[in-house]
Image (tube, rainbow, N blue to C red; front, side):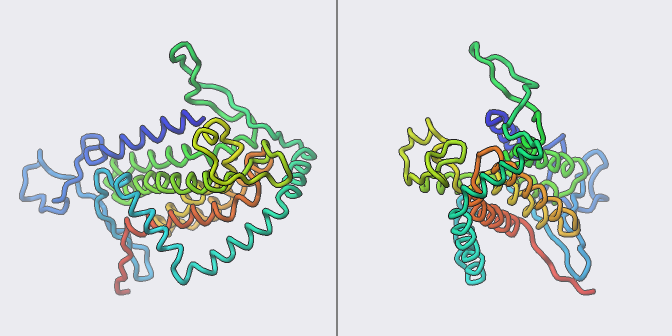
Length: 319
């Protein structure tokens, strides 16, 4: 699955980098030129860049830079740091710290009871996949595309990143085909945020070094801060529980979609419901503790807000 995630990221990055000429359609700086002044065979498509939300507000989008999804990552990380320490963020930081402490203190009991409940309702705990496309490279079978074999694995898979990247690919295709700048920008934002957020969660994981439930050697998992690079790479499940990158990914995707499509009221309830199912499935299959979630939610939401705020403008108009 990780290999497929890498392939999905690579494909979307390549498509995004060539989106200025996607499908033979060029996004020109002279999008709004008078069509009567040019010949019909050289007309440029008119891209939609403004979206009326009603209530005196509209969203306005600029053309994404060719490599914004990569070049803007350092700015996003700095923006996330500034966003996190703003005065209005302190209450949320306090909530994250408090809930993390309470959950971490009770993590073993929460995990035991969750898994006992799932056993009682016969919800399969183990993650199981069936290979759909697994070519051989250098004599070894490499799983590129596989499908989940039980409901717990379905929810777990939603947090692995590539479903949201595939959604981004769909938005990019739709935006290029229908000259919709919001869709193209949203696809770029998803890729950009996942890169920045992935770096942030990896840094925290490598600092905290918490055991995952399935590999725990003591109740609640042992904390081994700052493991060596080699140890982390060779025994990743021993160190990478805190925070949950899966949940951060889902929350980040929901935040970006909701910020760019605020008129779609169903995005948040459906997105947060799916996020809850992802979180539940990862406790059931022993990948994460409940205490790994509050910070993950904060990281995913924060990066989603920072990236989406930079890429769009909210303009207030008269009624």
